[in-house]
Length: 155
Image (cartoon, rainbow, N blue to C red; front, top):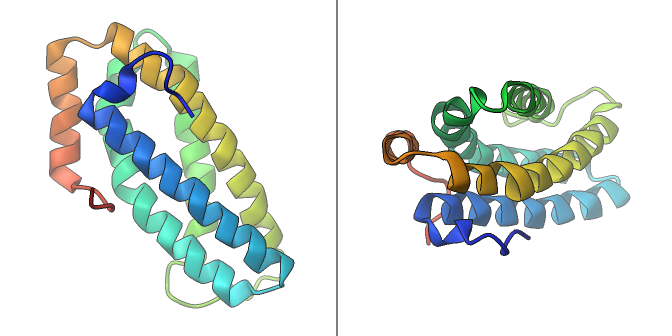
C-alpha cells in the first residue's frame, strides 16, 4: 500500500500499516467464508478483525486524529463515523456467538468493503498528512496512545 512518502519509516505508522495489512488478510478469509455460507466462521474472523482494530482505532482516535482535526475537521469526522459503522457490525459477533440475523453476513461484507476503502484513505491521506503536519509533541501523544493500549500484533 502506501510506500511513497516515507511515513512508514516512523514506527507508529509502520505499526498501523502492519495492522491494516493484517486486517486486509483477514478480510480475504471472510470472503471465503461468505462464499461458503459459513456464518460461524465469519463471526470468528469478525472477532479477530475487531481484536486487531481495537488498539489500532484507539491510537488513531486518541493520537493521530486529534492532531489532524484542526487542519482537516471534516475528513477526520468522516473517518471516525466510518469507525463507528464498522465497529457496530463487528460488535454483533463480539459475544462469541454467530449473529442470528440472516442479513448480518451481507452487512458484514458491506462493512468490510467500507473498511478496505477506509484503510486506503488512511494510508494515502492520513498517514502522509501526519508526517507533514505533526509536531514532536503531537507524535509523542500518538506514541503515548499506542503505549496505553499496546498492539494486537507482535512484530
